[in-house]
Image (tube, rainbow, N blue to C red; front, side, top):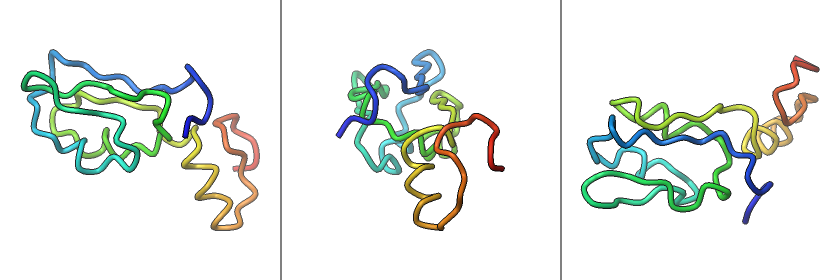
Length: 92
């Protein structure tokens, strides 16, 4: 499933990556994959911007603007919050 094509804020910095795979084990959408001893983005548009990869990367090789994507909208809906799904600053 792709939320919106070419809008994901996910970035990977291979020069910082040590290939530990911490990001792989926490990504709910299998967005990342191992490649030549490092990690690379395999399915960028499948990212729901939950931020798990960034929070678990010990080297800071993965960054994402968590809280602006599909995951936030789903979580807010489940919690019956009236917060918007994108980071517009409204309804906070």
